[in-house]
Image 1 (cartoon, rainbow, N blue to C red):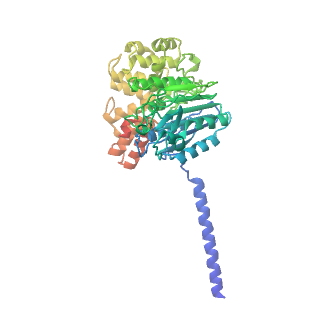
Image 2 (image 1 turned 90 degrees about the vertical axis):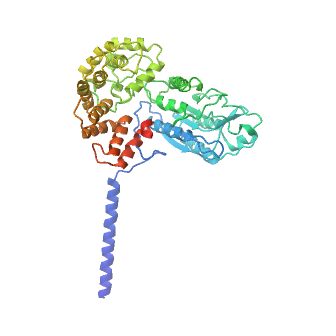
Amino acid sequence: MRNFLLRFICTVCILVCSAHVHSVEAAQKKKAPQQKSAGDNRGLAVVKKQTSDSRQRIALVIGNSSYASSPLKNPANDAHSMATTLRRLGFEVDEKTNLSYIGMNEAVESFGNRLKSGGVGLFYYAGHGMQVQGNNYLIPVDAKLNAESEVKYKALDAGLVLSKMEQAKSDVNLVILDACRDNPFGRSFRSASRGLANMDAPTGTLIAYATAPGKTAADGKGKNGAYTEALVETLETPGLKVEDIFKLVRKLVLDKTANAQVPWESSSLVGDFHFVSSNDAAEPRTKPAAAYTNQRSNTPVIESTATPSESSAALNSPNFLEELDRYLKIANAPLTEITNLAKSGDLFGKARFCATATHERYNLGLQPAEGISLCKELADQGVPVGMFLYGRTFQSGRGVAKNEAEAARWYRKAAELGHAIAQYNLGVMYAYGSGVVKDETEAVRWYRKAAEQGYAEAQTSLGFMYDSGSGIAKDETEAVRWYRKAAEQGYANAQY
């Protein structure tokens, strides 16, 4: 009897302890933040831009590099760069690399099932492609083609993607083919046509090619091919219609390839589509000055139509100078447009005029002295980008006497309002003792503030500080984490 009681008591204790362990585990699961990854996102969170276009955005992104015959360096990287960018733009992305024939067909079938009537569908492919008898085929990595007649049985017909889109009745269909590398099986074919053939775009569709029909494009020497690199640089530009995005891409690719590669589009779009509209324009990653927090954002990119009451949130964007670069490449008369917008009293126009006049990277015929007064006006009004630009004139000595202490003073004002580039520049000044007493711990603090806003140069510098143990305890794991964040944005110094 006593043995039975002992066994009973032990059993009860075990059950109670087991229940307690399970309850603790359940509570921990509820408390612990779960890190989710979409596709091959390497564990890094992607911050989506908020868009006023409420239509569902669905994308399939494929990059094929690992061919047994004629492997390619860029496509897998291209696909990842595109997928990352599209996720930021609100697309639900299915990212695939190095797919077999079966894998490609399954991916397209799944893509077709995910498309919704009235939504936006985007298909992107990088890899080998070829035309046979006027049809375009996308080549899987396991393809073994001995004759032209085998292609339609061993490669994916690009027309299948268009059929899926047409069947889904999406409002906007975008097909992007960076697949114009030369035919790797050409020697075994009787008629080896170069590049891809032009395809008829069903209503509501834009088809974009990395180069003109019948022409080929090189794989590229860097991480990305010239075409995809231009796409990634351009897609997040606020205010551009999709047709203007590809027009800008064409100009960038022509510049990158010395006019050797001319991207091409075929469109039957009915309405307008913006990846990022002017009203969405880069909701600032930095905290704007209080005087402007209640103003509506509107970023003029091609047409300078903003009024003083529509000052742009992009004033505080860490990408302000990059967006200005893109604008200058597509504007018909940039100096006239910038000047007129500045004269109208628009803050964004004033900032652009100030930057183009005082920054050495621009050569529009303006003298630094012409922009100094606008820089100071914006700075005195508490506009962060104005403070940053005015401070930079003192650092460079363009239009004013060089004074690094004064530069640091204005950088600090902008940095304290959350301006990422000013935070980074202030960090550099502390790291080298320029205009301030050298203080590597303070440098780390400002680098971190800018890095947490996604500024790639600051992420790289913060990674270096962890790597070298400067201003902070040496931590190679943290160094790699910050280097990777910058590398994922395509920043070459971090990739190195």
